[in-house]
Image: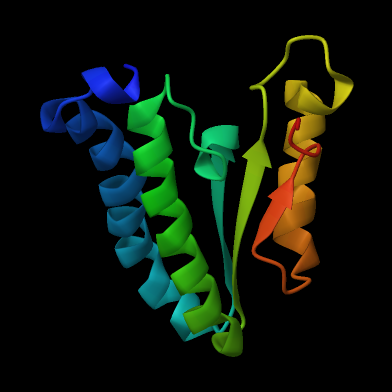
Length: 130
């Protein structure tokens, strides 16, 4: 994780592999079965830099933006087939004393996203700080 002016293309390789190539490969594996069933859920979980780039976390800011775009495209393309694609944004990370950010609360929220299929793509655990 480097500031934007210190980030090289090589610094983006790992974050892009994990946040873009990983989900693309995973979806390509599970999507045929979901389509055959006519239902399914794909959940993407990201930190706040997915929607508000951070100048000191350039790698995740760039990679999460790519993952977010891919997820939104999937959401729009697969909704008519009964396959729900959603993204949960966890600003400020997991834990840290905030009840909504504790692992058990996040697990409940993730389950809710799976079960709810309300049509929305992006959900926030808590609103982003100003």
